[in-house]
Amino acid sequence: MSKRTALITGASRGLGFALARELARRGWRLVINARDSEALEAAREELAKWTDVIAVPGDVTEAEHRLELSRAAQGAGGLDAVINNAGMLGPSPQPELLDYPLNVLEDVYLANAVAPLGVLQAVRDALKPGARVINVTSDAAREPYEGWGGYGSSKAALEQLSNVLAAERPDLRVYRVDPGDMRTRMHQEAFPGEDISDRPLPETSVGGFMELLEGSYESGRYAARESFTATDG
Ligand SMILES: NC(=O)c1ccc[n+]([C@@H]2O[C@H](COP(=O)([O-])OP(=O)(O)OC[C@H]3O[C@@H](n4cnc5c(N)ncnc54)[C@H](OP(=O)(O)O)[C@@H]3O)[C@@H](O)[C@H]2O)c1
Image 1 (cartoon, rainbow, N blue to C red):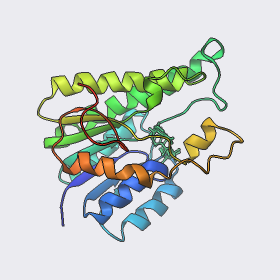
Image 2: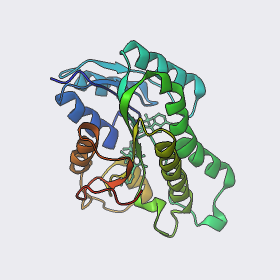
Image 3: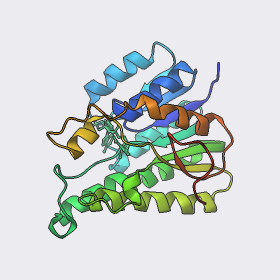
């Protein structure tokens, strides 16, 4: 059994929980977070069937909480992987850009771009050599889907942060990963009132993440459900 340790943000449900469960089954130790402490505790109890789990409830947009994550990472003996998965859609339904409330746009950028970098800054001293960094992005970072300008541009910022970090830190492996459409709470918020039962569950994206976490792929952009060659630098 591996004794590697991963920090996963937003691990109480959706993709983050699916990733945490698979890593737990593979013997990885986990540091997990989410804002809702009851939902996080339920996730921790489930994951503890397989592995050691430290649950740290809190909001990744808050610097003090990121310090708590850093202390937990140090207490766990360091990190082999960080998965910046927690994210925010913004308004539901999503407004077109010329109607987009700018104060909400600031929140979306904070949650989806600034906070993931803040997490990495906070845990930098806990990263083990060759640690994997995964920033969860989206095809909305690249495609001009109407209504997706706020969320999509925040994910585009996260993509370029990842791209530059990979250049600055060749000792790490920095992946920006598009998980594909998934049947989750966020996806339902993006399509309010619509039947999203045809979307795949997040578990269908997990295999690609495991390949990146346990393989030796170059830093770059990957789509979790596609065969793996870096899709660009
Ligand atoms: N679903 C899709 O189709 C899709 C497609 C492409 C990309 N993505 C990306 O995949 C990632 C996971 O999304 P999902 O669909 O699994 O969403 P989800 O089901 O809504 O889960 C989001 C998780 O993040 C936590 N979270 C949200 N904001 C947080 C914050 N500020 N601080 C700490 N934890 C926070 C949530 O718990 P609390 O609310 O309790 O904090 C929850 O555990 C996101 O980055 C999303 O942008 C999703």
